[in-house]
Image 1: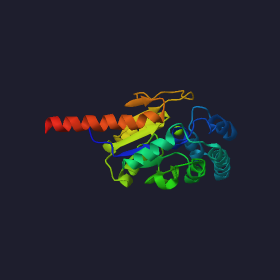
Image 2 (image 1 turned 90 degrees about the vertical axis):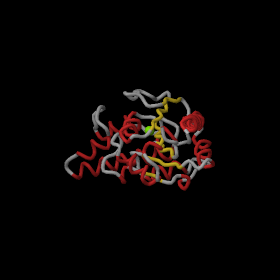
Image 3 (image 1 turned 135 degrees about the vertical axis):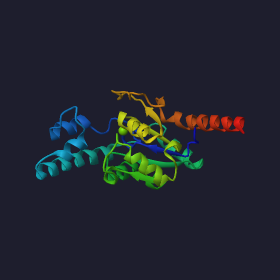
Image 4 (image 1 turned 180 degrees about the horizontal axis):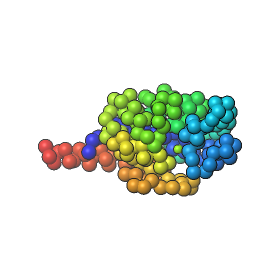
Length: 213
Ligand SMILES: [Mg+2]
């Protein structure tokens, strides 16, 4: 097992408190079926005028949600702790960069500049659950995918991480409706558990290394 050198966070519901973005409200407003994902639904809408209208509605929901967003429990401490330990930090989101920037204004101690990479839906052809964004993040963070810990609160985060060959952490909350199958490598209830988890992973790797050396 490789040392964890970087952490790639999902944004909404992971670094921010879950529940601020109203996915069902968005789906109702753009008439997207419940079992179809929003970005993919809008991407296929015809004609182009209907597509533009749907994007505008989505952007309005995202802007409101970003303004309401608050840091998740433990998020600020974790980002600062990773920074102190020189573990690189990235964000991979199906949202837009402007939403991340707006939401981070509600954080007291974490800023955009605390992340080496911020990859949004505008940077990839295929958003999560496709591994494209995770692989791109690993390249930009200058780590191997196997040195990356992907942390997210939705099945797509875990699917994308696993397909890319990263290690994965599923963050559960009262809003969790589906758990990833196959499961994430680790499942946690709070971001406060992540620093200790990285310690254990990196320490056990050190021991294995010493034993074999
Ligand atoms: Mg999320």
